[in-house]
Length: 91
Image (cartoon, rainbow, N blue to C red; front, side, top):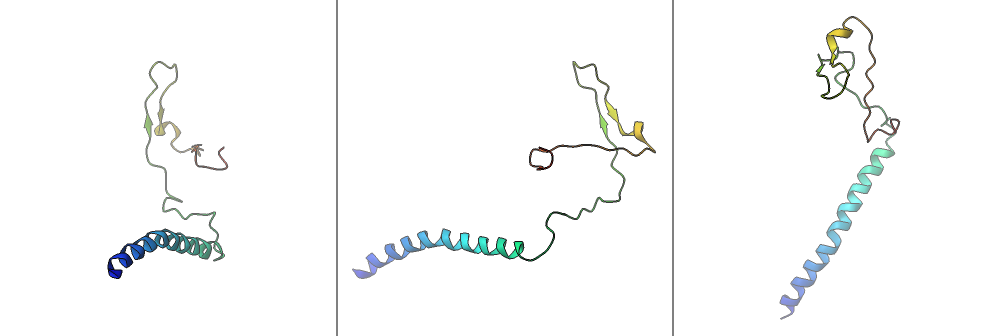
């Protein structure tokens, strides 16, 4: 009889402890990375130094605005400003 009551108690204990152990493991991993001293603000990119790919954006329907073709800017330095909702400085 004690074997039958011991198994649900052990399973219940595991269900309670497993999320806590996962959380502590992830917190330890994040803390290790945070305290490693590496500069996390700069993410290396394989695209740095390469020309931008050709872009062709058609004109918007119902708007009196022309489209955009990257050939218009060939041979010129061009700044393309792209904002993202997750970008802190863009807000």
